[in-house]
Picture 1 (cartoon, rainbow, N blue to C red):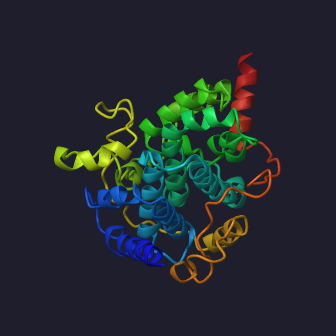
Picture 2 (spheres, rainbow, N blue to C red):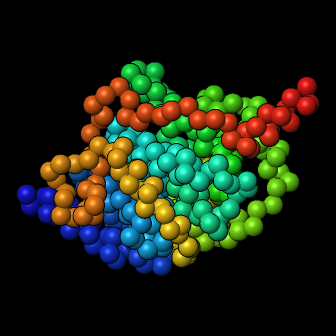
Amino acid sequence: EGREAFCNALVDVFCSKVLTTFRPKYTQFVMFVVCSSSERLAKRFLERLITITVETQHADTERHAACSYFGSFLARARYLRLPTIRTSLSLLARWVHDYLERYDANVTAPDPATHCLFYSVVQALLYALCFRVPSLAADAKHAKRDVFLDLRLQHIVLSNLNPLKVVKQTVAAQFVRIAVALRLLDANALAMLQEHNRTLVVAGAAEFDADLSFFPFDPYPFPSFRKFVDPNYTHWDADEDDSVSDLGSQRPSEQSSLEDQDAISLSFRSHLSLSDADHGQHGSPEWRPMSFSPPAGDHFLHHQPQPPTLLHQAIHQSNKSRR
């Protein structure tokens, strides 16, 4: 009971003080180190972050910040177990697909000003995948279900909202490289998409990169404290270069949210495995944090086949005309 209270108190302090602080550079690493000593605390931290991300009563700045912390922590915390990683990625993807189901059919071009939270969540998903795909792929050889099929990455990438054009381009490039190498995405479709995006100009993309491409657990610069961080920290091979590090240090700025995103949150909640006992008083009165226990059934997420997006159709038609 004492440990439970400590976990709740620590997460509460983080979310009320650090999460709402403009551009913190180092304080968040205290939480990173403390979480390495407690799997329960690490899960509680992720639970609270995803709760804030999807619930519309929180300020836009908090939702973007929580999403950034969620993706960065998921990518960098070496001590997270694969079941927790799989569930976390599935939750991000579930929200993205619910969002696409509601909005994508009425979109003809990327629009970071209107759909900025969508791009933040996709960016967090792709960033985490850049770090986690190798271990997930190795695990998939022995797993009963394929987490990559659950994520339906190609449907996200080829959606009309066209996230690869808006998210941080270093993240997009690394994700594409890994996804093609492991055959998670169709290489020909991606090649056509990249050709399409090469001449596409998106208003607000630069502002999204400057204001919302925030990766709070990028490498810690102080040697005196790195000895506490490094044993439990996942480094990118090019962290000392400019490949996936240097992903931006700007704190999220306030953006307008869509009025009916409540419907997406409600739909999202209906697909979660909820905790019935642990954290009720600390979560939202509408939704207690999700459980990180493995799903009971064969499929954590079940999706109906979706028709090709307008972007996908255009790429396919262009590809046919070149044959």
